[in-house]
Image 1 (cartoon, rainbow, N blue to C red):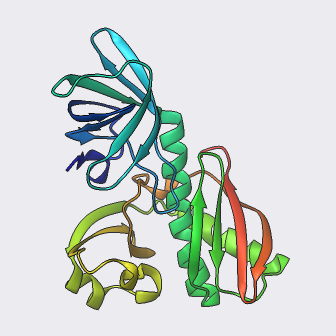
Image 2 (image 1 turned 90 degrees about the vertical axis):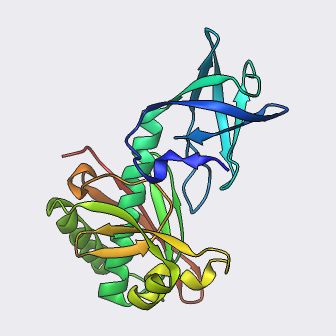
Length: 237
């Protein structure tokens, strides 16, 4: 089991670890700051340094024993390594993932539109939502509402709740805890001021003012009763 450091503090850019297992070009560490692909958020990239050499981390997968796929020299089991995150990529994911939470909250509050899917990138993101069709006025309203939350500089906090407490205290339309396997008994919560509170294992900024200007870049119909909204974050304020 890899200790996922990013769940406690996603601002750490460099960390030390020990190699627990090697399989081909993949290594499992005892602890990591590299985020594995999941929840609509891509994996981190960066490097592992050891013995005066370094290998590029080109893929990260898994949630228990987290696999780091390397392009370069492979360390030995038991070896100490230093991991360094590609911070520009991580920061882009953090900003767009946090903005997705705000957008989901606005869509639910203003249009009673539940989020059905999302995909985050370092420079853009998209969200799928259960709604017949948005017009230009709707999208402008969405953009204005999200930017109001950004400007309000809400804190972004994370903490853990036992599943029973989460199921009774959180909005089921936002958390979708019913999709989690029964084996999950503790839930990581991301709370953005009094705007949004939902279960999420991704990385996020610490305050909404770090996001920059939220801009809707397009929409498309994805099927009966489902819309996709694309957005990006422009220069940070």
